[in-house]
Length: 131
Image 1 (cartoon, one colour):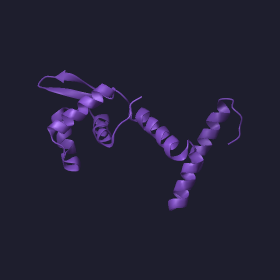
Image 2 (cartoon, helix red, strand yellow; image 1 turned 180 degrees about the vertical axis):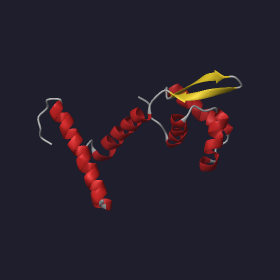
Image 3 (cartoon, one colour; image 1 turned 45 degrees about the vertical axis):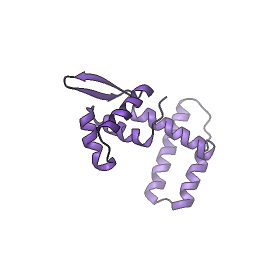
């Protein structure tokens, strides 16, 4: 699976919205990052080697597109973060967030909804109902 740096996330977020040329990416990211064309080229080259993006010839300019979905990379990053920071414990992470900033009623209801869906999936798959 692909691991992305912060800068690579910026490029991928653009590419997940739409395929782009180097110039389009530079223009989209210039204000936020200050990157010039050469930085974008270097990053795209690195990302191609990782298997995150590819390109096709589009006449005068290469058109870059993602090879991985946002969901795939997000899940991998989330699992890595959870393992590194909370020893893989989702409960520890949620508890830390609650302790740090509390939860609004809306956030609590959202979490209940997520847990109910997980419980339904678990029950449907024939696993023990221990949520």
